[in-house]
Amino acid sequence: MLRNLLAFTTISAALAGCGGTTTPASNQQQPNAAAPSSGAPTTAAAPVNYGDAKPAATKPFDTATVTTFDQPWALAFLPDRRMLVTEKPGQIWLVTTDGKKTKVSGVPKVHDEGQGGLLDVAVSPRFASDHAVYISYSEPGTGGDSLALARATIDPAAAAPALAGLKVIWRQLPRGQGGQFGAYIAFAPDGQHLFLAAGDRQRMTPAQDPDQPVGKILRLTLDGKPAPGNPAEGKVGATTLSLIDPPENTVAAAKAKGRQVTVPAPNLTPAETWSSGHRNPYGLAFDAQGRLWSVEMGPKGGDELNLIEPGRNYGWPLVSYGSNYDDVPIPSPTTRPDLAEPALYWNPVIAPAGLTFYDGTLFPDWRGSAFVGGLAATALVRIAFDGTKAREAERWDMGNRIRAVVSGPDGALWLLEDGADAKLLRLTPKKAG
Ligand SMILES: [Ca+2]
Image (cartoon, rainbow, N blue to C red; front, side, top):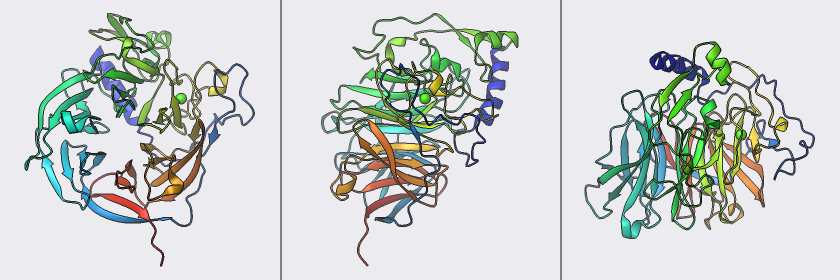
């Protein structure tokens, strides 16, 4: 029965896509521009929709192509300013700022299919002493893939760089089909904990189940355990899980169609959850004030920027400013003031990928701004802040899907395009003439 469910899930997953469509939403759930319902815990005003924002006519930067990759996914700088770049099919490269690439060996087996494969890479805040790197990927196994978080070391002085002592320190269970891995890694500013985006795997309702590390942002120790001080610290999860097909948003509806199954739930704990109700967080970063932000791939017309606070529920799949891909409406967030509103949203979608806060010196006007890549939008988006109030300040057409954006230690913005023969781009201030 589980097999049937998973087969059905795959079909639904294909329908759900990845937020990568450029089709404008014929959307029944247009937000109410008026003030939100009273009782919203922290939100003072309804979020603004930037879906129809237009690219600027001119760019304040020059764009240099550094090198190219096959389906790159993420980029992280080492202290010596070389970069680690992941390619989704299962390769890691050590790359100099002038584009010299050296293959990194010791990469684990990944399942490269759809949105799965080798995904994020993050460098330990104490890399100078521990040489640790963290990677996330879709780990193949009996019953389907799981999102896995692994730690390894890499000797930066080695002529032939390799991941050594690789160990999976956390994995998303139960295994199963479905994309939307999330997979982004961010370190707490003090370097004591890490945050991991665990996407909803196109299963929807588990994003509201405290016993499933699905549709959550997790706060873990550097060894992958639930971090002390988490909202559900010490709580133990259920021993079995009820899984529901994506089209059925309630257990009752799933039961009525025979689409609910119960599976054993070994070693799951709600104690690792920091926030819940996420669909596919596709960027995770701290600002200079120590606040955690995430961009999230929503359904049709529902991409979001969220300020991530502990214990809060960000609404998926109960509410969204978008609709389902089959145009089944989703209630508006204004109907549920108990759930966290996004800081802003995009309808139609930009399909956000990557989130970085700029802290360099080459672009003084950009300090404190966030940058988001757009897959569907084929754009780079700048977000400006007034406290926790966010607005899309600028957008530039980059001509290709943008998969990652990182504020580099040299003050440049570093972008990865998406797909085959994708360019690594370095953005620096436009030279006169
Ligand atoms: Ca939301």
